[in-house]
Amino acid sequence: MPQVILSGTGLFTPSESVSNEELVASFNAYVDKFNADNAAAIEAGEIEALTQSSSAFIEKASGIKSRFVMNKAGIVDPDILCPQLPERSNDEPSILAEMSLHAANEAIAQAGIKANDIDAVIVACSNLQRAYPAISIEVQGLLGIDGFAFDMNVACSSATFALQNGYDMIRSGSAQRVLILNPEICTGHLNFRDRDSHFIFGDVCTAIILENGEVANSDHGFEIIDTRLITQFSNNIRNNFGFLNRTNAETRDAKDKLFVQEGRKVFREVVPMVAELISAHLADNNLQAGGLRRMWLHQANRGMNDLIAKKVLGHDPNDDLQPTVLDEYANTSSAGSIIAFHKHKQDFKAGEIGVICSFGAGYSAGSVIVRRAS
Ligand code: CO8
Image (cartoon, protein in one colour):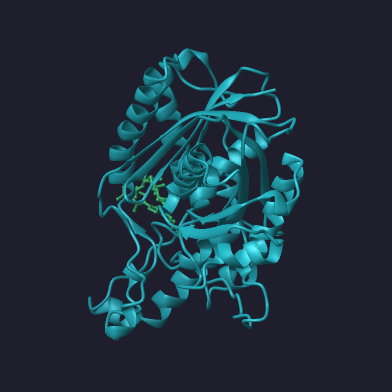
């Protein structure tokens, strides 16, 4: 089997950011207006008054302080509370393809290759903006890549599932160089009127280049030692948006057509599942948790990550062992662990080992063990 080298990463960060304070001010203005407009019905007990949000709660419960977004004006306008991203003509690049190009170009440069050296493109993300043609095929065309491309969705675990796909493709010989893209406009499917979740997500795009070791010559390479994926059905994180919604006008715009979750249950159930996944994956590769240089975990909740790392390592992790980008980026679904890897890999020395791990809706979780190659 050929070695598979993760030879480059890229990151597109939107230019606009929203702090917890700004988000909460808009949400609370919406709440105040709703309660004033419905004062009589609330008084009569016909509807429930809405409760204000709090930036102190958000930071304490999640570790999030701000998020990057593709459109701030719509999100912070209490009368809109939704990003405003006008539809583009079929002759223009789609917004997911445009984000992907920015991240792809950085990853391609870091790998020291040209776009047309790539022979497969995977767009792996939580929400695709259209049914077809695939965004990946659009990106393939814009970059002038021969070969093939496909889109896939495993929610927050899309990136690690794509990594295993690319790893398998290179080892089986169906591709030599694979470009993986994770364009996530999470704010497009977030209910900014829901106090329980309005603060959770941000927007971003990450990119990864995988190469057959025989053709890779990057100075930034990480050898993929092994990958492991698990899934287990759960309704605790769900989004019922889909093509059949238009067939039922009464429920078409209901709250479940955006992101909904039982956050407490997710926390409780996913932490042990992920800790066991990483521990067993390391053991089966004859690796000790104590030998890990770093864990680049999915960025959903600071407390969750600290607990997973503690269960795996046997002690509290510090920021060097388990870096956080959640404070600045919030949850960016599949891109989170890849942002952490992109920003916190330069200091690795040859031979040092780390784990990229994602987890989320499905449930789904993926573990990718990497070793700095040179
Ligand atoms: N402001 C003030 N108070 C609040 C707020 C708020 N905004 N929200 C809730 N509260 C209150 C509640 O009313 C409750 O009050 P009381 O105790 O009086 O009843 C109290 O705070 C505690 O509420 P919770 O139990 O809900 O709060 P938690 O401490 O559990 O924190 C979190 C909530 C932060 C959501 C936490 O549960 C969490 O992070 N859980 C893990 C979730 C997770 O990892 N989910 C993964 C989802 S991501 C994924 O899989 C990708 C899906 C695809 C992408 C979708 C993109 C949109």
